[in-house]
Image 1 (spheres, rainbow, N blue to C red):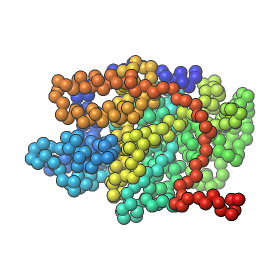
Image 2 (image 1 turned 180 degrees about the vertical axis):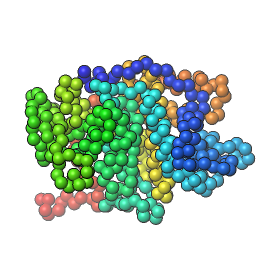
Image 3 (image 1 turned 120 degrees about the horizontal axis):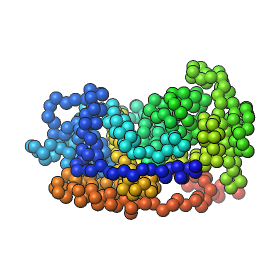
Image 4 (image 1 turned 30 degrees about the vertical axis):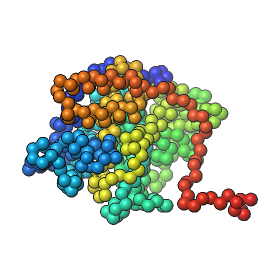
Length: 436
């Protein structure tokens, strides 16, 4: 079965009815997440801990507004007494919430959304992608002490590695730390959240026999796929076809010391494909040639680019090219990052339900994220102030816009990929002596 045919198989579904903000993020799941981290409040507050989740969502979606304006716009404060909350109280309430509570909210909500999304499969496997990204934090003293600065930059940065379901762009798991922490160290933390019967696609920079062995050994049918790294040593066991080989990879003593469960040798499959005269080789744990044809595997790796598009949607569309996070303390930076991932999944799941309205002919990655974001922003502003009788019409109009969000087929690359020069502080002297 061709990859495009496999990904376009999705059943009909009826979208859930939305009547309040609580229907988008169920209150019971928020309370369950708070219970995991013992996050409770004994006093009645103007801004409850449950409303703080919506504050973090608003910080990601309405990134050009102050926190005080977001609270008033979403109408998430108790209407008794004064109609506003002091900005200093908002920061204090965020500190009381902490990082772990919003992390648990993200984890539980993502699990529920993935279960309800009726994910597409390829040969019985869920397609996942893993890749890294960096986030720039505010140049405060606390952030400078907690996070490192890359060479040649002025801002502390956080390194993040995410795992994404590629047909819906839902983030299933994430881990982040200081900029100097290696991506493979962060990827190791995602092993426990990887579902069984899945195929995870990596960039070639994630090649590590210890990581790949731990990934496929942690559950049932947890396969991996990545391009063959240059100078990788292997021994051919036998040929499975013209461009298909079964190979043996040999680990070194240092890798076995870092990964005690790593064997001395590991069997993998090497598939070769030529595109426009250029040879591409991918390495995978799917060694059964009958279930996983080489032709399908060769064209499968291109779908890993969906996670790169997901990062662009977060930074460019959702955050509006706002390059620096607004939080000035490390624990609030981490909290804000979980809020960004939660907000992104919230929008992406509504796009999943839009696809259900389209009767299964499209998948979420074929809809415009920027257009869906604009409609959701309008819906979030209107729901708190709408009368109960007007809400069904708003929701019907919201899902009725799904057909207008269908993207045209992607064009093939016009120009070859190239490495652009880094921006320099001073203009390059093209008349220098050594350039003549």
